[in-house]
Image 1 (cartoon, one colour):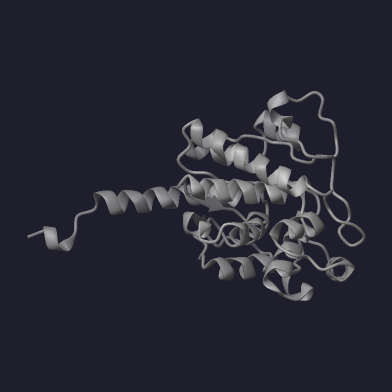
Image 2: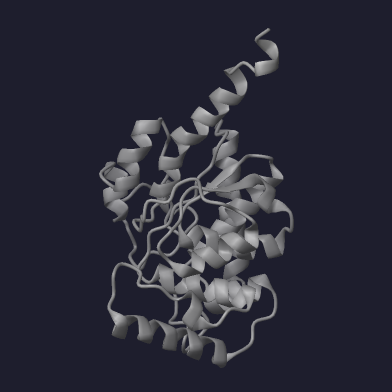
Length: 259
């Protein structure tokens, strides 16, 4: 998938071209050396893969902070390069499980309420996901957002949190995509309360964990199309709507001015 992104053949790559956006690919924790991809893709790599959260912490001590800082650096790089709107995307196997775990742990929601069907698993698969989360929560208590990211998250979720916090600190708006960025946003708000004022929700995911995250963040999605692709694709599709809204606000006359 990393190579597909780099080739410009992924779903978000196609959509980004339609709105004039640039896609930057970063390997935070792909379980492959990716020796044949540009060095710039691997510059922020933290580790190869994550541990299974039902039996061990996802990350080693200190890795959540390193990943958070990497995400902040990525936001700085984009903004310094002229970006005036940012969209974090994600691609990972099992990422809806991690997103559900982060939302449940941060908001105090039962595992069964936040777990969805991901890419379309059956009832047995969903029950397994619920059991994984329950074992993960029973394994040890988490204390604070970075402990949550270490125990239940991933390098990608920690980097997304850093990306969001840094964007808000530099007063650059962010469109959140589906459940994974929204889960990272819930944790990011714990780290930087008020940062959510710079975020909007691009679309409503089919995952229940996102609904809890959006309610906690006070966000209403721009689109509701039943999307589940990820990659930032839903948020990119919200860009034309936002552009049209801006155009109306900037250019439309008021009734009071028509006399």
